[in-house]
Image 1 (cartoon, rainbow, N blue to C red):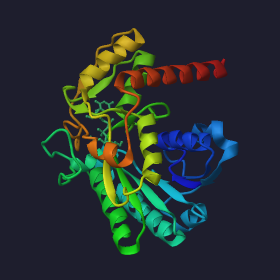
Image 2: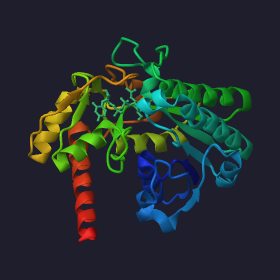
Image 3: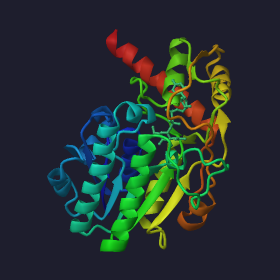
Image 4: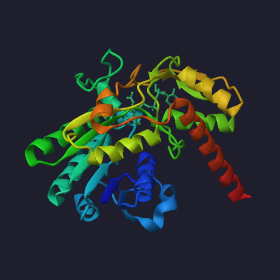
Length: 318
Ligand code: UD2
């Protein structure tokens, strides 16, 4: 099968591409390298087609999608705080870009589009865990853009018969998540803080909780979503079904690294959800999704990866 992975040089994208290549599929990556890095594709570079380009340019998507069976659409500006600072740019990439991908996919008559949606769509709906039949109430522009992406994907199914599956990822973490931007995910930030023995910074009191989900589970979901019968038009939570708070994460990393560190507490971040936890019953039933790597093992693997990467960089410099 031939797959187009938008955002395929990014964190979740490159992990997905690795697995597709491992399974012998043909892969085209479209990525503008704004968040992704070519080095994320180093191991598969000579087995895939890489096109540098943005999803805001429909002509480049049309080139990349040529003869694709499936599209896994991950390219996005993925940050709640960035969207608070620049909602227009977030809208341009996440909504206009997604619409371009859908139009190109419709015209190319692909078998299905899998869209990376987000748990941020739920916003402050009070009930935990979150089920897909709750009315989304996003509290950040980012959450709005991800929810609109779902609506567009589903509407393309109804209007044009384009098969689509939306996966609401719950705080995916793991190797290759970029720690270097002020908008980076908290796990990447905390892991590097522990490696560098600097203070991990917590926004708020650290009791906010997340369903932190190791990346291999998201990769599994992406692949299942392409082919699962009766999944088209569906929205699925992709998480672990558990949740932990940030204070507990800091404690766990202290144990893993052998260096217990005290966090610094800064004011809470605007647009943040307090608690998040997935009900994954629907994904289990329809996609056959089952998380295989839990938080503890995921954290260990992730910390080991940052440590090995840092050691390799230090060695390369000397
Ligand atoms: C949201 C979505 C997630 C995904 C992601 C994309 C929710 C519940 N989750 O993640 O599914 O779409 O966006 O990027 O909406 N924090 C610190 N210190 C730091 C960095 C963050 O305390 O150095 C806090 C932050 O204030 C928040 C928590 O950690 O309370 C998680 O933040 P994040 O940016 O890793 O992810 P989040 O929940 O915005």
